[in-house]
Image (cartoon, rainbow, N blue to C red; front, side):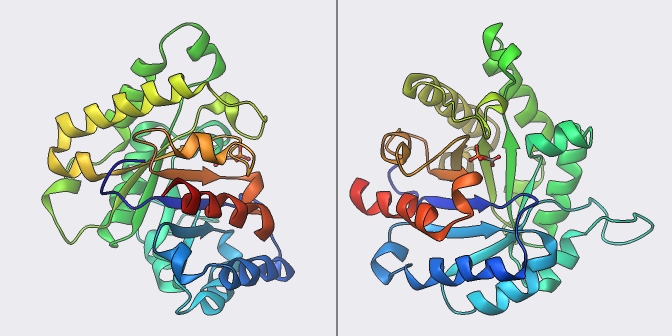
Length: 259
Ligand code: PGA
């Protein structure tokens, strides 16, 4: 946690979830008490097909609904893609861009990710930009260089200058920790997040000091307290453990214990 920054717990359902699974969203909402709301923001990034019904369910609940990707363009001949404008039109105010599964499966470069982030921010969206090293990069000692390159390449330059633009959130997700049950050591996460904070302040000044930095990769109820207590870890991006309300809300409740 960083003093003065409200943490954000974001779920990433990936390509999981049918209409019946919105019951999990209902359960999350019903256990998101005002006391919990005051210590942690809650966001669920769900498949595009579920955004409209999820937003209806989440109206006035304090739980935010987001998408998992957007195109850099507002509209046009891009079969299968969804624009930032379409996601906001469906009711969601947040989106993930540059997740490692998109960087790998869809060959997205940091330049592509920057285009998507620019489009999302122009819509006033909360934009979660993902970065993270592979196992080979960590083993060869180049993790911080990789993070710097991905941050420099993926975060739009014009973000701090215009107040009407949406919020940038950075999620550090080591590729080798996603869905594997493995997590870096506390010291390694602290080192990465301290580095990210310094780089953001260098580039964006005061706004970089206030940017929320999430950790993602095998976050579970069992390890959330120690991960979320690390300085400069201002929340989590959670995949597998966000699918079930019991797990996700157990992670959310750790913020009451840390505070
Ligand atoms: P995981 O996924 O929590 O299942 O490791 C995290 C993510 O990919 O965002």
